[in-house]
Amino acid sequence: PAKAGLMLRNDASAGSAYVGVFVSATGGISFQRRATAGGSTTITTVATTSKAPIWLRLGRVGNAFSAFYSTDGTTWIQVGAAATVALNTNTMIGMAATSGNKTQLSTATFSNVGITI
Image (cartoon, rainbow, N blue to C red):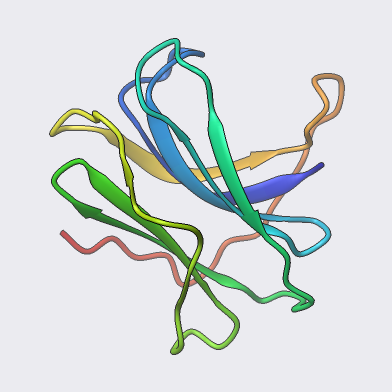
């Protein structure tokens, strides 16, 4: 399904190690990660009946990553447990969107984006 969210990854290659938190078009929130380059992707999904706007947050302490979402921008709910992913000190970070279908494009609207280091 179509989804949009936040992603950190080692590089732009298709099999790069990464972590991301996403909201689907149906409102599900997922914490996705690929611990090593070329490895398999692990996905933890929680269902929410909330509609947009939904706030997303990724946290990093060393190589431990946590994903969170909020329906009000104040109270944060963790998505699954923290995960260890071997990302480089210098990583790519940004917003991501996918239609979930290689033959279709997708769009997403992001606002109030911030990075705290």
